[in-house]
Length: 410
Image: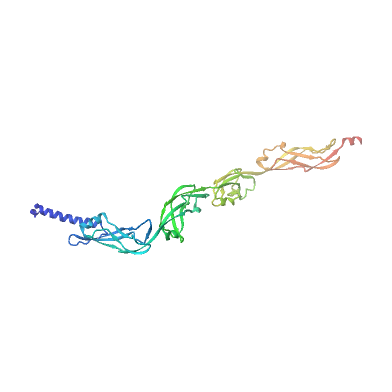
């Protein structure tokens, strides 16, 4: 055995056998789709999938349909002859339609592999359809989808496309069947204008089926003008609940007379004012500013809250004593005589306001206008600041109107 390994020929034969085994192993591993059958040591059968099919015809004049894009090719022959085709795929499979006219034709798939290799193509023959090639210009329309899902308050004002037309090339029958040419613009969540967005063109027949045609250009630019319309409307303050018994609502108003609201134009048309969420008066104990959310209609945007000024009055009473009685309207030359020269005045209103009042803020008035000499019961009129109720301790005074001249003559 040691002598065998010392022999050059033994080593060479053993290396050759190892190389052949290794080649067969690598070839099978790299070509799992190949079906190899060795005839002796030199013949083999190999199957290649996904071999492209070429079409030989005047493409400027005709359009061909129903030719398979790829076929299966089986090669048989000496492995040395097969190897270049297997590794490089340096051959063609084609249908030769030169010289054939319009209409359906049964044609055999051909190849350019020399005769030392047997070739089997599956399918062997196909029925193709040859049609006249035609080109026509079509207008492109933009389909703005999901406009109802745009960002709140936004709407489409206008759009433009560039170019407005494309040229479609296909068979005359396909050209005649075209129903629409569109680009789709997805407006979902859009909150700003779209400028020159490049989009693919889609072609459909009259039934709405998409067509695979040659077009120039294959995409166009679309611009969409987007707006967020607004308008100013009055803001009304709503209330709910009631104040505690000893409290009275002096006033409640928003610090903002009008609020700017945003929405689609058709929504804004129907809105004449916006309300706040109701202010719960049962939670209010004193005057101050309250942060109140706005009660906005659906799909309307505006500031989320507003400041509402609430004035609360605490009911109180107070009596101011010895308010002097004043006279008005006494006729020229007449004199008035009455017993009381002052009275007490009871005031009702907001306690904080009453505490600041003095006798100087109150008037008790006897109006003698148009009174002739003689005895009269004259009502006492009490004048007090706004929001204060006043009542005198005396409602009327007995007054003697005297004419000194007549008295002297008597």
